Amino acid sequence: MTVGDLRVKQTRRHFLHTCANGLSGLAVGTGLLAQEVPKKLAIERIELFPVRFPTVMRFKFLESPKGATGRASVMIKVTADDGTVGWGESIPSQRWSYETLESALSTLDHYLIPVLIGMDPFDLDAIHAAMNREIGPGFSTGAPITKAGIDIALHDLMGKALGRNLAELWDRTTPDVLTLSWTLNPVTLDDLEPLIEKGQAHGFRHFNVKVGPDPGFDVEMCRIVKRLVPDGFLWGDANGGYDLETALEVAPKYADLGMDVFEQPIPSNHLTGYQALKRQGALPIIMDEGVVSPEDLSTFIELGCCDGVAMKPCRCGGLVSARRQIEILQDKGLLFLGSGLTEPDISLAASLILYGAYGLNYPAALNGPQFLGASVIADPFKPVDGTVNIPKGPGLGIQVDESALTELVEQSKGAV
Ligand SMILES: [Mg+2]
Image (cartoon, rainbow, N blue to C red; front, side, top):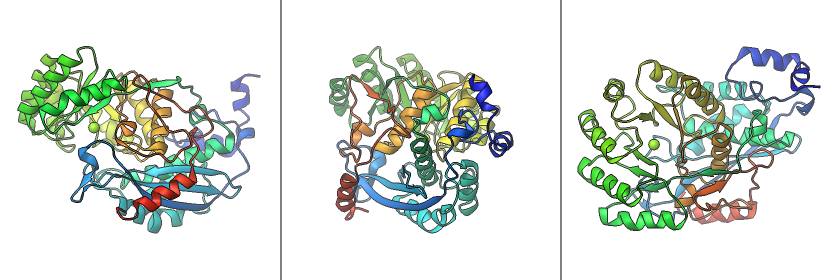
């Protein structure tokens, strides 16, 4: 019997669900068969664990007026009525976007959890619709980083309930490892060489560089990186830190130095500026911060704003949206880069499986293992030779160590 033969046995409900919404996280492309879907489950309980993962190196997005306060995460444990558990996490970074640990916690506690209790954890369309009703949009999806935590937890729960890895839910397979990029974020140029050596000591051969707003400093930094790592993939990310004039001036200099891609040169809402940078054609222009929903991405592509996107499921409201965006990029022949928000264990697992399943061709800027000094899973991710294992087990393929989590919650109390 072929897969096609089996698929016709989908229930009418799932068939209609498939037809009704091309963005469904479950029915479209999952290959889930009716006989494999367990009896209808309901979300019984959602528990929240606010923590701050300690950092081991300076990273500007993990600082606050109080100094380096750690990587904020609201870890989310969803339990279904048959006892199946799924883990997710919301990972705001208030210097990267407007969400904070406190806003994620209160949004989940007061607005999202009350409407999610009792819902079918497999019905991701209804889950996202309910979350989007409670927390409305700004320009795009509201509170996407917070909502991504729920989306990831439900993907883990579905995989655990079916005994399938996320990639298998999507009818896909993953390679054993993913190649990573090392993040360079020096305060002075003298810091640069030791930072590169540190990455190389861990086997990293590719580097992403935080640039902006000082083009003099940045060009010199990239010159040094290219001299020390002539064959590595050099990825510049300004996080919207230049104005258009500066970005247009600096892009050809970066191209001459051998930079491969220029990410988020100017603020997200400067769309005519993105059009100008793409028209200039000095380097592939990559968008990040402003691309939240698939509709945003389609619009920016139609407007000629970018050559590709640095994907981040946590920025996009979760895996349903991120998968659709990758499919749009691949369909249009645009660049799909894999990036992140300094993911700790759970969100890192989700990103690794996503990028592996969709055939990422470039080193992923997933720098949680580089910057974070704690883990709450049984088998922490440890890069070897600049690569990290992609989890293969059911759901996210990781096991949360709840005693380690309890300890981190306690340690975090002063900082949360
Ligand atoms: Mg970025």
